[in-house]
Amino acid sequence: MREGSERGYFTFVLHGHLPYVLQHGTWPHGTDWLYEAAAETYLPLLDVFCRLWEKEVPVKVVMGITPVLAEQLSHDSFKENFVDYLNLKIKSARENAKEFKECGLIDMANLADMWFDFYGGLLKKYLSHWSRDIIWGFRTLQEEGELEIITSAATHGYLPLLKRDESIEAQIKTGIEIYEKHFGMEPRGIWLPECGYRPSYNWKPPLGSDEPYNRKGIEEFLYENGIQYFFVDTHLIRGGKAIGTYMARFEALKFLWKQFEKEYTPEEKERSPYYPYYVVSPGKEEGAVAFGRDPVTALQVWSGDHGYPGDFRYLEFHKKHFPGGHRYWRVTGTDKDLASKEIYEPDKARRAVEEHADHFVSLIRNALKDHPEGILVAPYDAELFGHWWFEGPLWLEAVLEKLNEDGEIKPSTCGEYLETHAPKEAVSLPEGSWGEGGFHYIWLNEWTQWVWEKIYQAEDLFFTLLEETREQELHPRMRDAITQLARELLLLQSSDWPFLITTWSARDYAEGRVAAHFQAFMDLYGGIREALEKEEFSEECCQFLKVLEEKDCLFPELDPWCWKEGACK
Image (cartoon, rainbow, N blue to C red; front, side, top):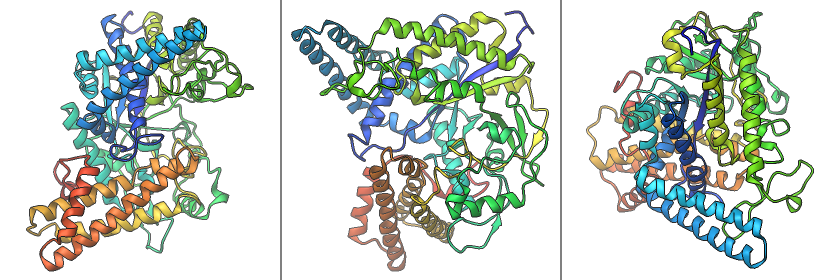
């Protein structure tokens, strides 16, 4: 490509995240989620990125790996059991092939052989090429300049609704520390969970009787912790009011919106999502850079009606053959029930990949033609590619290859783009998220109010205890107990639980996890209070602490006394 000839820039942002599931169930909800994502998304993405690298095709993808995901993929129990999982998939594919051949279903038998090769190849590369270390694989690609890996909040807590600034500080600081542990450098960017953003204003919790107080804007926390950039949804960048679709349906949400609306004056100017903006809350001076999600390309991939993954030629996600769980059918049609799905034809799916990659590149070109030197940012959940949309990794590969041949669009990570294209405008953004309705409804509603009541109670108890013990000389096991209490609080705050409750995707599991972490928090908190009074731990509390340390063992280096503003930098 000729120097200066590019019309614009482009990057995929892939947000890799799963809640903490180790030691918390297997199937249908639990560690199988992690095994599936590793086999169907993370390893295939590594494979695609390496192929592109070897072909000298610029990757320049921004890869989000949440701290809780990095901890799980690095855990010894995952590394050991994932091998067993892959071997089971290989065995079931072999058995399926035998079954189909005996029944004369030759096309089905060929697909079973495809699955045998797919999982066998994954196992071989996982053991030999990646040495059972997926995180090391991504780190290697970052060190070679092919990826830019970003962090997120520790357990994907939904930051705009957390009650105390200390909780936001805890989620962000822990996220940075875990990133540095796994990737050996400081993160430049962050994925705000659910793209949830809140500016600074006089905020009152939507539940309870607490008095309002001036909250810092999310961008201030990022600036103070050295984070350069983050992402928001299109409607926040455009400068209009967030789409409060569900306000009338839930009083607590309406209350939050009215609080914010009093202090927010929307600008008449409509901003382009193809340029970054320096974000500061009204009356403030410190902030971080926001990139907006492109709406056109988002619709083309995410839409259930118009998106690529719904093409009739692609592998059907929902229909599986048991035992084994392999998939042998294609989408076939929107009007077809699972019983009517037709057999999958890989050659036709590969042709669809090429067609859709061509179309996507044309969308990028058209979107940027009136925005010279702009950047189109296309963020998606990483698990869409491979897990939900089997052909997704191949489509990513095809898009990046075609961009390399195109010559008009230059792939670039967000950090690299900012090195030569500093934001020209400082703005104040409205409050919102990328969830349905554009505000907080998916996470705060009539089904999840009880979740936030428990989170708020735990926040108040924990941070009061932390301040009381900050200057004390504590017994090592007391420090361990308070640290474990911090882990239970972080796990309780995970945005996954209210999301799964609202969407009914795994409601029972999510409700059980909230109840379990809250009960663990309260029982341990009671034991700590008793031990502080008596100046010794009861045997019962010691045993309970040991159980929790084995079950909820993420972030082993955690130090909650560093969560105070400005501490441990």
